[in-house]
Image (cartoon, rainbow, N blue to C red; front, side, top):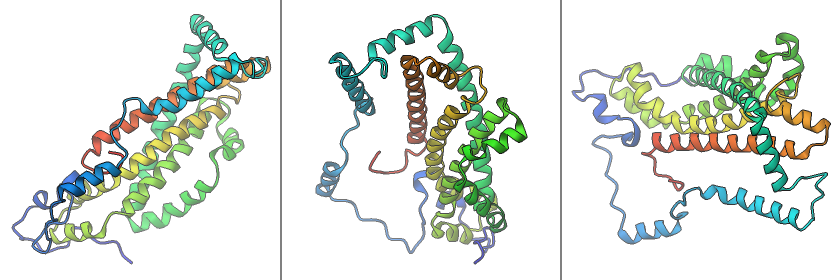
Length: 305
């Protein structure tokens, strides 16, 4: 089955594309055969509000981590935890202060952020380009999708021996491992969103004789953004997961290196400081992506919104 072609409709309809196929919240088929939706009764709107998740509380997602820290603190204060196996929050906080004071934590964090940032950047760019090539072209789909589906079944970490052979054990290998994990995640979600665009929008674009550029701007981009942001959120998490592993392979700096060194001397407090650092950056980066997603996709009416 061939993909619908854009730009093959009859010209001279007298109606411009931007008036009928706008981007964002107004991206709906318009025409004489479409009956406007009836207004929702006030009672139904009230019921929908009651059935929803309720008003969002600022920093509400911190409730779970704070509860976990409280349980950890109580177990340590009641001597249920052996400090040789798991240090208490007070000891971890004191160790973090010492690491900050002598500059070790900041130096390692900056190195880790650089690795994760470069891997995320290259991975997102590669994933989007591959998704567009496979999602907008039947030949591209035949050429790329099967290969990337196979790659999805192969963990990036399983390719470490081969990547070390090819790229050595330096920074290039570390960034490549992170980028591979991010690229596949972004590709899968963006490609699924592209191929899942309602065919009615494509048919409407054909009937209006939209150019290829107008079709991409008015139909493809708004339709693929939700899937792209899902892939981006998962890609951010994948970048941190890959970073944890590659920083323990012949590294001389980074949070993972600091944790590996602490393992040799049974310093559980330093290990927990590293875990907390990973958790904070992972949570903050996901929250940043969510904030951008809410702003860009503010036209969508969802339960979470």
